[in-house]
Length: 375
Image (cartoon, rainbow, N blue to C red):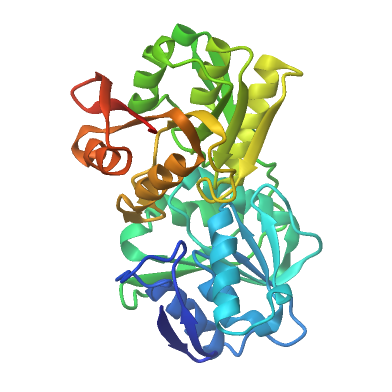
């Protein structure tokens, strides 16, 4: 935990999930820039409604909590990180209202703050969804680190919201200012289609969900080896994205119970749509949670996992490591974890350390498919 010091006050903030001796802060220079800009403009006024979009670990929401902001995010980790930071600073949790990124908050907002996400497709859809809650006189400010801010992102603000300009860079961060043009008309982007005739699959997924326009090579390797999956009563697709791996397993094992897990609301809704389209009334569970937090121990026969190797803009294996640890807890004795990942990530070492065993199922020049069994 470290302390942010901005005109609005000083707050102890930490990233989520918390990690021992984590060198990374829960905020960046773009957060500081936007908070200083608000102070310089003497904003918000007490009567103004404030909307915050994509607040990474709740830094903006925590620093601006006295204005009772509304927070919109696609990540349940963002909300949990915010709750933890509010608690550590002894701030009432009910001062902030949360909506997932597929839900439009009611009413209109006087100030809208947008942290630019990594996915341009997500940004485009979010900006379109924001139009009904913005007024002509609303103050709209985007923020990002310069290295993550593309010209295309700025063009999306201009195209969707209205006349746009940017600030000079400060501490390698930049702000985006948009004036709302009420004459422009847009509708939310429809889910994208992903046709996989070689696997007899036609899928859809919301903008911003992983591997939006084509099947990633890791998932392809799992699909090619799906006939080797062990028989299971209960199967979890962990970090499910659009649900492709769980759906493939469900086809192989028509009597299995499927559980789709992801921290993204858009991913889970995509998986739900795809599963219901393919299997109709067949029951399945769809959980927006942090990895396998809260799942019953010793309850699952098979977990299939294509873990991310980054959290937001930060590359690392922390999320994968957490997934592997929790998978071992949730698996029954003799249950199996199937993991696909880039060869250079060395997942076999972690799996051997946790499970005491690891077998190579299949590989390409770039990816490996591994399995570990709980003893």
